[in-house]
Length: 161
Ligand code: SF4
Ligand code: SF4
Image (cartoon, helix red, strand yellow):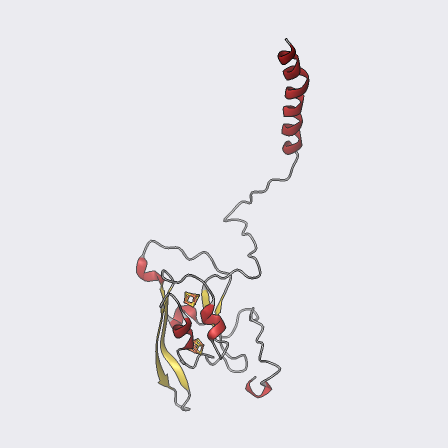
């Protein structure tokens, strides 16, 4: 008898209170992919290769430090010289299937050429599409929007910019 009364006067109102409380709460889900969640500032997504702002030339000099720092061994490059005698990467590839998005390549780069961006929508059912070439990685030129990267050497090496 006491147990039944307890259920009627305590447990049921308590359950209804919990239901009503959550009924008026804003939903925590979003309508993806129509609405895209903002990524956290330190999120590391798909790579991109940067260019110099003044003429759009490639920042990468094919020094190989990013590949040496990469624990997953997923960066491949071949160097060459342009008509001005400047070294550049004739071939630069990243196997995004092997990549663990640790960001070591970005940290190792002395030219601030390689970065991990915020892009996360690059799934495909074809394995070879995960080999990103230089054409895939280089930011378009002329730029469609300002670079998301803050170049830390800008004030230290004004002759370069
Ligand atoms: S993020 Fe890490 S694993 Fe991926 S390419 Fe760079 S160094 Fe290699
Ligand atoms: S991306 Fe940077 S570290 Fe990698 S080869 Fe080019 S200049 Fe060197």
